[in-house]
Length: 216
Figure 1 (tube, helix red, strand yellow):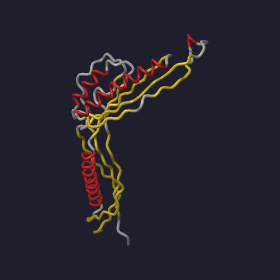
Figure 2 (cartoon, one colour):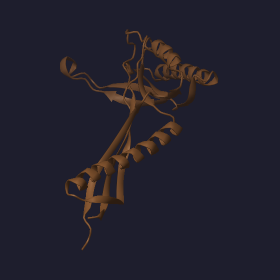
Figure 3 (spheres, rainbow, N blue to C red):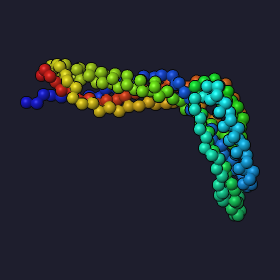
Figure 4 (spheres, rainbow, N blue to C red):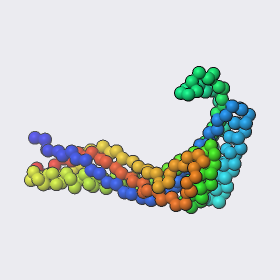
């Protein structure tokens, strides 16, 4: 006679303050003069890349990357009160710059400067270092299995059974990163950025574990 088994779901999680902030700066300029549009976008792009490079030199930032500015042509169609106008040839130039900060005060100062920039949008997300993430995920997985065992033991005790052997584990999990109190800046926003309080990053794991009763 086969021994009874219990299939249970265990869960564990831990919240930690972020160790890195990831700032994505998007530059977008639109106009009817291709040369002017391209030049303006390149000027902003080069200036912000220089700032990102300086932040890395001072160790305020740990990494940065930048896409090459790109310009394309499109036809703007008119609707509503302007319906009937001939489509207008326009030009759009854009690029992105990504900077990973470890000094959040320096980042906040930069966001305040970027808030006055026309044609610039900013988004901030939060992260842990790779070493911390791996260490915490290993810890949380172990706690999730332990939680599953406790639940299985409770179910077994309810049936008057004891002694459990782990047969299999199906694990899922990861981390959830939440934006901070002021995480997205619109181009040319007049709202100053003085304090940024990021929410914690929650690292969680869920396991489906099968236990076999050894003492029915």
